[in-house]
Amino acid sequence: MQAADHLDGKRVLVINQVRIFTGTDVIESGYVVITDALIAEVGPGSGPSIESLPHGASAISMPGHTLAPGLIDCHIHALSGNANSIEQSLRFGVTTVCDMHNSPHDNEELLKLSSDPANKSKYSDFKCAGLGAVVENGWPIPVMRKEFDHLPHGRCIADKIISTWPRLKRPADARTFVDQQVDKNHASYIKMFHEVGDTIGMDDVLPQPPMDVQAAVVEAAHRRGIVAVGHAFSQAGAIALLEARADGLTHMFLDKAVDLEGFTNTMRAKKAHCSPTLALCGSQTGESQDLQQRFLDDPFAQKMLLFKSPGRPVGFAVDQPRSRVGLEHAVETTKALYHAGVPILVGTDAAGKDLGMPYGLGVHMEMYILAHMVGMSPIDVLHSATSVIADMFGFNDRGRIEIGKKADLVLFEGNILEDPSVLCLPIKAVWREGVCATAFEM
Image (tube, rainbow, N blue to C red; front, side, top):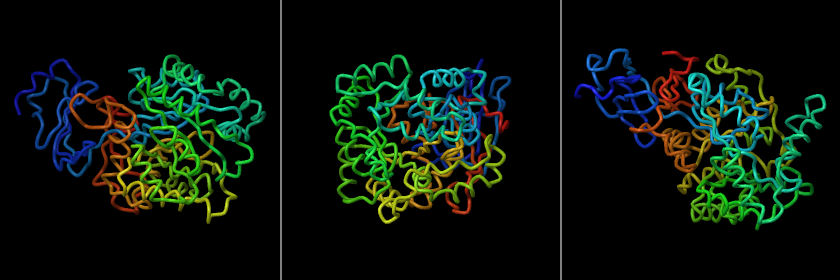
């Protein structure tokens, strides 16, 4: 290694003697050089010697640890501008969160918080869809009302929020809607809803979203160079989204696949991805509360959580017969997609408000389920929480430990995801854009 003259005048950190998961492959013993906010060097062997580094540079050796790209949660909702969505997430190694439908005003405030250089050590980066593509009386109107029903005058609060959402009624509305989300509401992707209600006991309440409108939304998103992803809790809704050419599914459906091989082949043919949100699926059916409590009781979780109470189950499918609707079916379908090579993405649908999954910790729950219920290999689970999301969403500046990428990093103790008795991943440190999170302070 030659003298590191090119590092002069920059904030420099060298991490040496560490196992590196680059987002693509594994370096059993290597080094990473961070200059300011970016990865400057990565490779096997030893990095620059401390003598060759500019004054003020730091170097740490971490044998027995694993360095990985910062985790990404590709599905949250930061309702009411809840800053825990970005603060608590960073404490659990999640350096980027992707909001999937929220008030533009609240998103604006979170974007300001997360982009302030002074806050890199406190908050995750924040990406958003702006507002989702809602049809008249359609999803997520029912869940928004449930989010607020425990508050005094909660229904009035929810309905006031809902009244600000544009409704798509015809294909001609799609282009204006998408342009508004991108140009005014900072959307990095578009969120759709095709919830027909047949797995959550609401098929006689929710309207069928018009297929020509859905297809027009996807076309408008692609015209702007971004992906369109869609919500559905049933196979019928998921198939409709694929027919509309959606790029991915933001949930796995809850019912047993009628034709599992046929659905899997369709996903592959459409080159679609899936973020199954299996922990959230269990919250919908009331089946994941015990697992959530186990994670909440983990010592690392108790240290890092800002809100320590368990989230109430979302519970829209809790009364549905398990023979037809349940977490088991969602896991079975996810397993089939994984073995068929369909990209699987880690997302939680965490929304705060004491409902569903906790921010940050929910990513650890989802990764655990993917490893120990779906049967994904540990390295594939890490792919699903880092580089796969970056690839599918077009986040070309993150998701891998490569020269020129953001220095969003997580340092784990030992090898990870291999022991089913380990719940929370053993995080030693987190860096966002080269700045160590204050919850760790190496």
